[in-house]
Image (cartoon, rainbow, N blue to C red; front, side, top):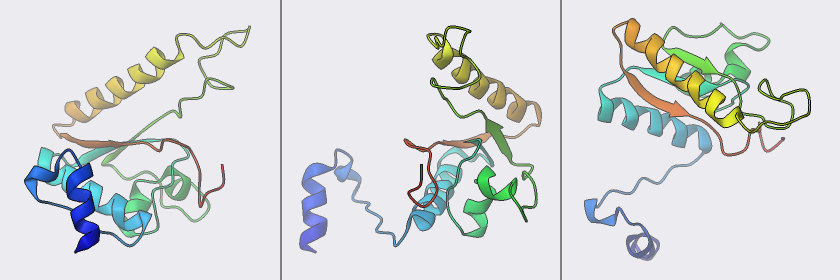
Length: 139
């Protein structure tokens, strides 16, 4: 109870009175997916290539690292995959190693993924991206 009270003072959203405690990253990501679907009434998600979001059934479906890897079952129909933003060796570097317009180009891929989802008559639930691309802490 004391721990929860400390969150009430630091969380700008504390007025709604909801706090979820989870046991793992997989559980957190699965909960995020469930909440996103409930909030948006959407059924589709956008993820970044090479992403790993966990080992539950739902988070494996969010993880190109798993569904496109050895033993994977391929990309689920409700998933759109965009390229990993990489200004070091990514797709949008010019011959001089300059990636000044890379952000806009990677963002355009997200817009295109949203358009593909809309064309199917479905709705986007969420976009899942890691702040640092890693699997089990390995970058």
